[in-house]
Length: 271
Image 1 (cartoon, rainbow, N blue to C red):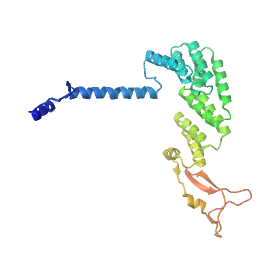
Image 2: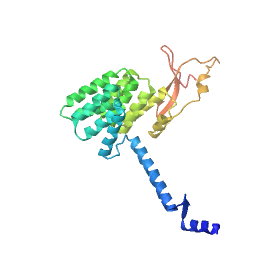
Image 3: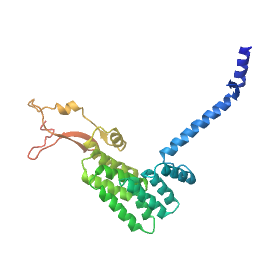
Image 4: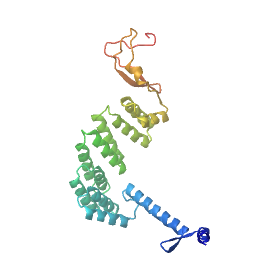
């Protein structure tokens, strides 16, 4: 009889939990809803809650401020909401509070610039941009972060200024050259993108993303094995202590010895 009851439950797609009756379809539906909610929460967390309706975003931002009024990100989020609603003074207030708690909060800095550039006081926005860029003019890493924040606000002209000032301070930085290359790539300027990708690769050959983009742009990347450089010898058999560099020639990236002043550059005939 017990076997018959179990078979009947399986056939009808139902089972019993703690004396309650529930169908397998209901279980499936419940599981689907739970997973959907988890996915939505993850998406909302990833985009800072921007996928939520405005009222829900505002309620969440207010709750965050109630939990911790000194949270600069919460003030930034509230400022974004007021800025979207066209309430400039309220947005400015929350941006100022955010920067009082974290003066280097680049998201708020970029948002403040955009707030006034799109208002009746564009010169105030330019002044803020100059102020924020001058603060990090000698710090390439911070300049790159500010550039990214400007890009998120669709302020590409100011983003480019940040990239360029980072490059002036650290012209031999693989990271700076790469970030500038990717900026030009997204702007559709493949010539400049290739130029800075090659420079970045010259300074750091262990960048698969850079090598991949160079290959996509038609530049063949040839990386010699390290022992070939480290154990290079002169025709006399002595260790070759010359310094080496990576150069781009005829669409290829290759390694060549650095010719010191007064030395004769080797040619194929010399070899």
